[in-house]
Length: 101
Image (cartoon, rainbow, N blue to C red):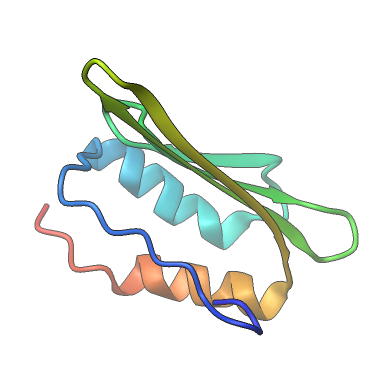
C-alpha cells in the first residue's frame, strides 16, 4: 500500500523452505533484538529483508528477479521505510497465513 496507490506482485512459482518460513515468521515478533530478517525462496529469485532502525521505524526491502531464457533477467528492487503500524500489518499477515505443515 502507498498513500497514492499500491504495488502488487503475484507469482505462482515461489517455493519456500518450511523451516526458513517459520524462522522468519517467528522472528518478526522479536524485531527489537534482531538486526536483519531475511526470507528468500528456494531459487533466491524472491527476497524480503526487514531491518529495524533506531527510531522505531523499519526498512522493508522486496527483491524479485525473473530470468527470461535468451533475454536476460527482469529485476525489481523496492525499499521503503515503514512505521510500527505498518510492520504490525506485516506481522499479522504472516501469523494469519494458512500453513499446511
